[in-house]
Length: 372
Ligand code: MRU
Picture 1 (cartoon, rainbow, N blue to C red):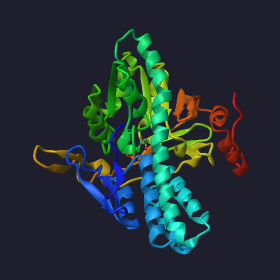
Picture 2: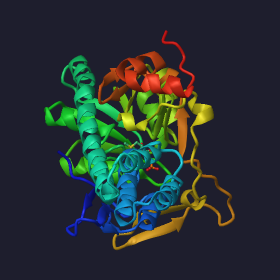
Picture 3: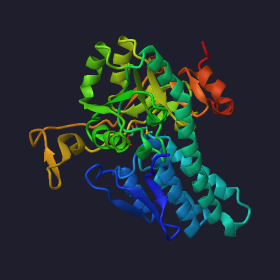
């Protein structure tokens, strides 16, 4: 079990989260009392990572339902929450799950309680999914460990897909934590993940907390490491993966997948089913890519020994753009590590693991290429 970045406060209604903007330098807890508080936390990346965005959204809409479960009020809150960030599909998925629970509740006086119970169920289910991802990913690391004859397995990861991005265990980190608990020798290459440095700030912190050997590298180092046989496996998370296996994840993931393919390094994506978009098959055309403020690229945040400090790293007038995610085509993905097992990133294989979702996607008209 790992710590959690989100919980319900002692009053039984305030959602409390770790403010991830300040880690690893300061550990500050934020109170999210209103829908507006939750939206602000999601937008500003105080809470971030696809599963955690979903769980935060679930608690936000459940809190709104407790205060007033009338349909127009809830719909208005739901639309605002869903618009907070565009790429992680977990956001809309979680809000819709809670809305569904409210509408399915026959007693108008119990609707708030039904919404709250659904948010709790979503949270518990995400923990369980991540735990299972760890169990299903473990054999991949065990096999590499055997092949390495005891030499540490070198895993490269990008961004933060750890417990901070989920509720417990993480997605990409779940197999890493599980393998470490089993005593397998491991070492993790941590991509710094510009511009907001989720790797340097968050993944490095998480791994250090439990003593997993790791090394921070500049974002562009992965290709070099792979060319020299220093990466055994790449494992990343995802914000949205299509029913045909195209993967949206933090900007720079695609370049890692290209380098992995060129160097015959297996490239795996770990995800709970809440990160699949069953309505899409073409990720490049269908997945909305968030563009964030240019100043996130033009400035960096750090610790000067006494306080956090923000400095500009380019000439004052330099224009910048800030694409937050990219799409790795399914053909570059060796496999998906899900709560139901590991599969190839193609429609048929995904549907084999999630037959009920495949049917739903077909019914909605998603283009489902035939499995080869
Ligand atoms: O912008 P962020 O920090 O929310 O981006 C997060 C990622 O890209 C993660 O890799 C992804 O959400 C998977 S989290 C388990």
